Length: 294
Image 1: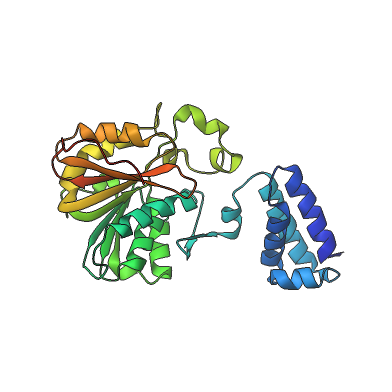
Image 2: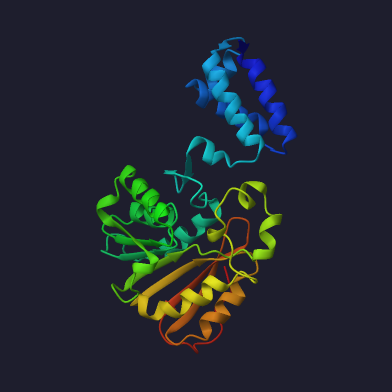
């Protein structure tokens, strides 16, 4: 049997050697999970013994993290927009960058009590749609995805957050774009150029689904497929908010300007200053160049 301090020291060393910058914090969080004890208690009583079963569970978690399995997969949840989301290897782990999509969409809503219709394309965990439903109490929404297991996870998240009555889920292959015009469309489509995936952090490159990452040779394949559908999807005053990678806002807007019935609105930057969200509206093209991003 070992003490809390000894277990943490060993885990810290292993995680640091694996290249994890927050090794000390993650070691504490994993030990807290394995023992069912608060971090503060662990720090305050480092001499306490760790029960054998808890130490075995802790060592297994540390070994998985040292192989660069995402921390969120180990603990099973990730916070997004202040809400807890269950995660699994079938979807992307929600990221802070994607909160810019939610922010941009909410800023475009003049009346948050309105009965808006939302659509989330490539919903994954459901984080974009459910964050918006949390903020828009009379809205309802549809999440579509190509992965049945992702829809099951999104539905479970909706249930856990008390939002299930206002959320529906459908496989993209069974979804008809003209079914119900949407006031707000959000999407985090695959946008990583396929040749760049191997160079990403191991947590992403080897543990997140390639189908949710790879956007083809230039990262824009999904946009070429989805943008032509938007004039049929959007309500007359509707807007679409699309997450893009660094340097992709211009190319995505160029695709949009070639589609009748779409117009480009100002982009949205994320907290790091990256032009992260392309904003499109229903309407005629040819209204001039998009406004300068904020």
